[in-house]
Image 1: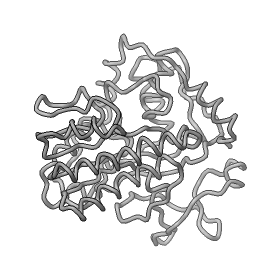
Image 2: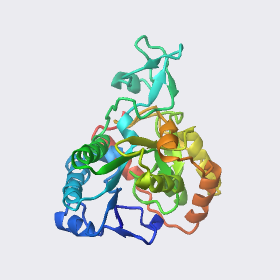
Image 3: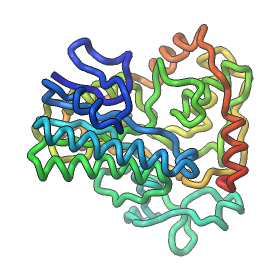
Length: 334
């Protein structure tokens, strides 16, 4: 039997068991693993911005909760763990210079961001070109959330090697789809935009909106999870799960507005940024193809259409403004 630690409930098949309770509760976790030989570890407290002031809670849920799960997994002799990691562990994605040479360790400094100079630049101030990010890129942890997600994946891989548990870490990129939490201002960006639109408000877009991300349907993510459960070559590896296609955040805000029938609610470009945000990051999915046999199937327009149909009749509390005020009050926006 397979046990799922954490969401998403609506996408589960009937032959899996779901942990009901706090992942930090040793007895609850131990009971959940009775007669189980494989675990999907999806449990985490999410949100880059909030993690920068709720540091103890994020560390407790994500890092300590994973340690509790791993102790139980060792005791119960679990065969395989598939753990949900995140693109956030990369920090900035990968870049090349004008000559096509990889440039490592790049990031934007505070003075640059305060000037509204959003693009990543090389040592001489030259603008760099974003390229697809491979799993071999050195992590650059820009938030407590990213740090704890890295904790989760490394702990699972480390304990897996030590105790003979087959562990696979899937680095999810920007996942979207039906049944996402619409009232959580720290969840996926498409859900956040949807909550604004449902309340007649324009989507808020940081910086200039031209930052690039990789948006992947939850259906493709679930397919990757299923493949990861049995793929022998994937054991002991980290694997990107994305669409393999970059899109600007501004474009996505405009397209979701059109999809829900509110094309006049154009994105509000704030011209500010949040501490911990990165400029460009999108997935190289060659390793997912090779190790999992994964191929994204859901076209972005198709996925947006499904999301828009589900949003009809949904009620969402727009808490984005509250979250923005909270970040500003703590000096976490520039």
